[in-house]
Image (cartoon, rainbow, N blue to C red; front, side, top):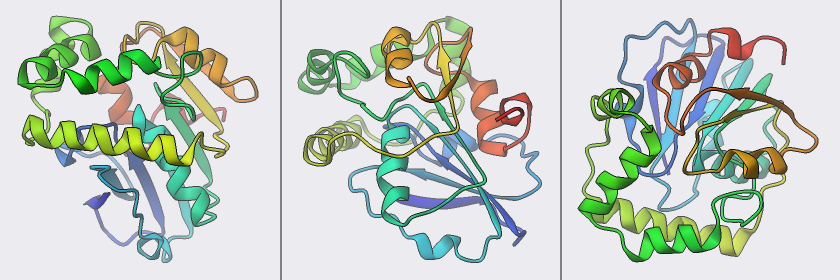
Length: 222
């Protein structure tokens, strides 16, 4: 995977964000309000994660979105990171699962039929409305669809090999209008985790900005 600092002022605190499948640093290309260093992780052709980049920080908070929830769990449990707070948004520790994630047939069908046209359709389903789609396209990844297809295949293989994540999240935020990770499946996936439901689709620019910057109501009462 790629690990990129989007804000680096060498503060003692780090906001660590795992993006969803198919994303790049453009997802976080917004005016920053963070008062700490911020790192975004993306491009999961492999799950290689370098924990040495985090050793200087006294405090780390973790957020993840979509397939990044499972990836974060796999990466962080291997390096025994103990963050101050952690939030999962519209993803689960069971990313390809008929009851607790993306249904298996849906995931495989997306991969089998993937193309530029399929990517455009996926974006519409992910965003839900024309306004959200326009907001996403302003920060859409600058990557060819063939690269996204290869990443999706790599994620399928990694999930099949590694199985569910055992990472313990402090809070799970579930979008009630999510058409990628169905909200009913998400709620079943978090029986022992504090869940917060929100009136959101799979992609929500404002929620993601709060998670990336580490500021806002989402981080209270964890």
